[in-house]
Length: 247
Image (cartoon, rainbow, N blue to C red):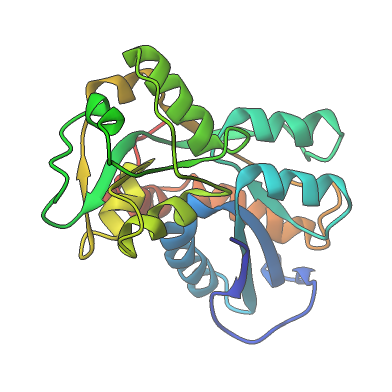
């Protein structure tokens, strides 16, 4: 899933730092799909704190975003759902400074409201007739799921492999599967439609979320300001409310 959105305001161009030191212009943020709700709100808050800025979000699987950045896509900031995908960007020389971890996330088993299949743990995902959606191994939610399943000694044959966590969650919301391994934050955001079933092995697959400004940033001042804002107390409060853990 790929979504490019602006959080509000007028498009002020690439921008940068105004004569009085204010940050202006568009800040293009490539962010993991699991950050959709949190970064939409954080983007609006950043705009309010920095009049004259617009935050444009490109939301997708971290592996796809890393590839886009390394292929030259114009972006100011990269926020990944796992260090591995960030390493792809830093090793290509596209990180402006050292990435910093701003949040952590754990998996739950997302099931439809009412949990009609009676799923209570990972072992239930192997029962005949239980349809499961997982993220593909190359994206962070898929790698985390693989770690959790291996820790439990459970082999699951999914009916679909999705390119980001929102895709796996959508299969549950649409009733196409009985369960999916998704982040706790995504299950919470979709609580009107799904229930998140906690399982102990998720503690073996906690994902760190790093963020960094990019060397090719069209709005370098805006990029650095946004990274700093994500680590600030107001943004950290938004992330905590969504279910993210502090780094």
